[in-house]
Length: 169
Image 1: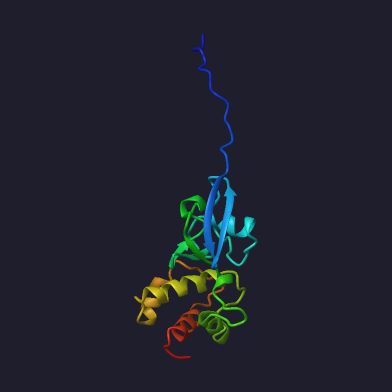
Image 2: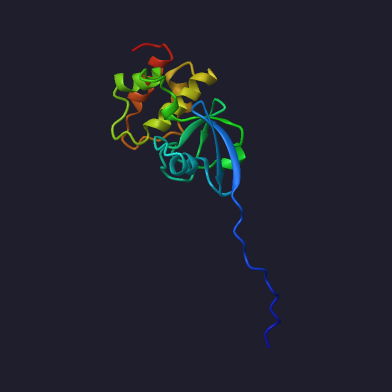
């Protein structure tokens, strides 16, 4: 004889939560499911598709954005946990038609091939420069090691970052 079954309450869908973010300088309030990642909010709710979904496990860096000026993997950040934050995506780096110095440096140094990782590389490099900890090619390589380029454009990426840091062309 099997033991009596306990009654289980039916699962209910959690109500959407409100999140307010300043994204690329614009205040946005959205209603999202509690499990919505910042990456999915940017791409699916705001059509900011520059930020790429690579591995969706925080291992490749393609989804890197700046949150309050710091480099963050947006696939690992729940949108509701960033309520009130300042988010900068690749779309927010340029000033109108004027490219951000890193964007121009990536063009100057042909620092991309397929281009898929480029937005994450550039956002990560912007955070790296703001941190002020990289003073050599080796330090740049180490601090950018979380951003994978499957095409292998690393030497050009390092040169582009050096140019944007003022270290030459």
